[in-house]
Length: 225
Ligand code: AMP
Image 1 (cartoon, helix red, strand yellow):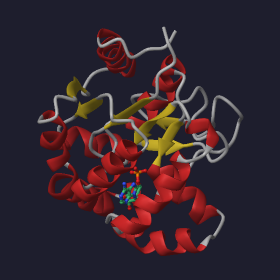
Image 2 (cartoon, helix red, strand yellow):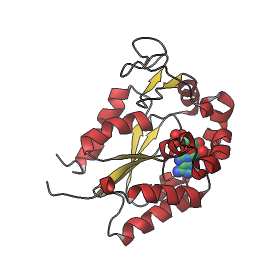
Image 3 (cartoon, rainbow, N blue to C red):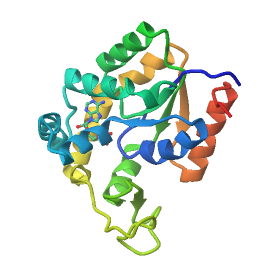
Image 4 (cartoon, helix red, strand yellow):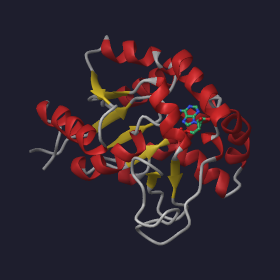
């Protein structure tokens, strides 16, 4: 297949499995995984000004303002490894972000190719988030019940001690879900109206969701192998 530039957006509420699925899908698509939440956390860890700016919003489960977020993601997309496109996760999260992305891609002669939306009911999400544990070294995500590491609390890949995200506490999760319904879910219609949205049933096993994602992507001939 000829080289093409691919931009795929994984849409879905917090803890719908976007990060886990994207990590697997990126290999299939041979695209870099650009996750805005990871970019913010990286900035926070390195104590950059951007990270400090974002922290107060993240701690409350609110969205970081659009201008800051758009500038950060556009900077990431302008790096050489994104020359062939990207698998976007967590961005866009508002209509303004989606419009900014469309404008930036159009200016370069590109467009969004597909928007799989992973749908999961709220009560399932709350249960998932409360059991989510992450590796501080490789970023692998686990769940104490649904996807446990071999040894409790320890990463299978590198033996590091797993941690729980600050914003995975129940109070903050409820706020993040509310923010999703108010500010991000309008993107479902935004992309559906453009014929780009594909609904993915997210309340299934990780493998089943991945398989649905791959067949959605394959059906429209977007894979490059
Ligand atoms: P995530 O890891 O995608 O759940 O993101 C964690 C937090 O980072 C969110 O709750 C927001 O505070 C912030 N964040 C990530 N992506 C965005 C975005 N596209 N727009 C605004 N804030 C974001």
